[in-house]
Amino acid sequence: MNHESASGLLLRARLDRGGFSLQVDVHLPATGITALLGPSGSGKTTCLRVLAGLEPQATGTVRVLGEVWQDSALGVFHPVHRRPVGYVFQEASLFDHLNVQDNIRYGFQRTPAAQRRHGWDHALELLGIAHLLQRRPSELSGGERQRVAIARALATSPRLLLMDEPLAALDTARKAEILPWLEQLHERLDIPVVYVTHSADEVARLADHLVMLEQGRVLAQGPVAELLTRLDLPLAHGDSAAALIDAITCGVQSDSGLCELRFDGGTLLLPQTRSTPLPERTPVRVRIQARDVSLSLVQPEQTSVLNILPATVADLADDGPGQVLVGLQLGGTRLLSRISRLSCERLGIAPDRRVYVQIKGVAMVR
Amino acid sequence: MRPGQAGLAAFWPAHSVLPNTMLLTASDLQAIGLTLKVATLTTVILALIGVPLAWWLARTRSWLKAPLTVLVALPIVLPPSVLGFYLLVAMGPNGPVGQWTQALGIGLLPFSFSGLVVASVFYSLPFMVQPVHNAMEAMGTRPMEVAASLRASPFDTFFSVVLPLCRPGLVTGAIMSFAHTVGEFGVVLMVGGNIPGVTRVVSVQIYDHVEAMEYGDAHRLAAVMLGFSFVCLLALHLYNNRHRRATP
View 1 (cartoon, rainbow over the protein chains, first blue to last red):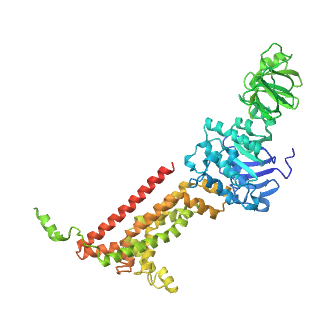
View 2 (cartoon, each protein chain N blue to C red):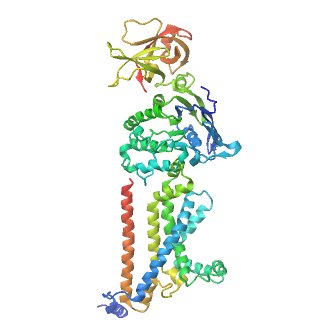
View 3 (cartoon, rainbow over the protein chains, first blue to last red):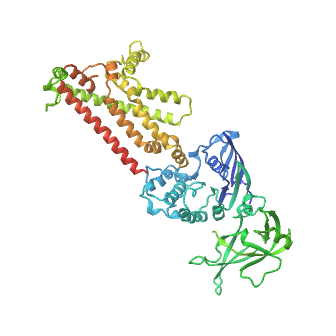
């Protein structure tokens, strides 16, 4: 993927504001969901606001799909209301004086007819809110409000959708309610989405591309599966370290009832969790946590573990007292394994060593 | 009966203490009509200048914000006679406003209906600006950012989002300005005088009745004022209660 191409997104920005300084140079692909990940105060939201034009003091360049929205060197700055961008704020921020339908129509009516690509009600079914049109915002649940806010942003036919921690203000149950709708968006939207979050779980479920921020600087950017397993980055460490594998379904084995997934590096079997099995050749994403992967020098036999695959050790890194993280290559796929330093020394684990990985847990995240 | 009470009774004729059932006099009705006219005009003018002023105060980071906020609030604490005195001087033949109105061919404003309205606008300014300003500050900047992201220009946003969201403040401001203008007295006396049909408003009419020992007339008109003010504030109270319940 050529991120330098004019068709993607370019955000090169600088902003200094009492004690906080942002200095980023980010190139994003023209499709899919890009997550901006980082701790509080790392500048995620500020990046989003610069993209939208909500931070007029920021200097730099914003170029979206070949259009220049800001170029401080040339004195170009399109104000927010002239940028074809949809913005979903952390709190839904619906207009209290309008009902759901009028909230959604607000932006649609103000979008020039030439820029409209669909009707105002285009996203109602996509977000499951058609039955809420006559309600007041105060009569909606937190999850419903956020879905209306997304539909309102989409009704302006944006060329770029920005979402600022849309799930942060919701409790766990509401998050679980809204995540499937966001996954739907991912499948059905043809515009790039930039999604701010501090949740590695949301990244695993939604993102294709990842930008990691820390103290106003870019720590790393690239495809999400690659960044999650890079041992030099903090995401690969800690208890939740995991690898993501994009695979396709290959049907359900009739004798065992197990679902077969094929990926670049082998085949995985996992129990059928859905009431209706996924059709064959559906793209899915699974997450394999580093603590669920153990290593063996010989192919283990007489074990209850279903998924045993040959792999090559790529790299190693210390991970807390007595623990080692092992980066593994299975064909074109990377996997992480956390083992004790003692086991590592006993087995002589070192780069290029051929091993067998035993995968004790596979979770389908998408 | 103690001596003091006898003296008071002599000073306070018993037969005119209680209001009788007689209707209001023609001059009373004229004063009421004039009062409503002044209050309505004042409220309309205040909406036109007070709302933009409140908006500016809510949004600006200028150093002028603090002194202007205080200046707007001054009529609340100043004696009406002080405010009236300065307005009289400013609008008089040698005052800056007076010279300007004369140059424009309007003539002099003191002791005229227009002068009364101008004075009322200054006198009631804080009652319009403060509730609207508070509502605008409470709203914050988020609704405007949302509107901008939905393609609304700043001008459009002001009318389609800011004003509707600040409606409780606007209603409070309008009712308070109206009621406060109806209730003014000191400024009217200083700037407007006591000209029937031109500047003699209800409060001045009541003063005249009392001066002339027409306590019955004073009573009836005072009761009208009391009832009106009570109804105004009650309506405002009920409106605010209902609005608070509607938006949790």
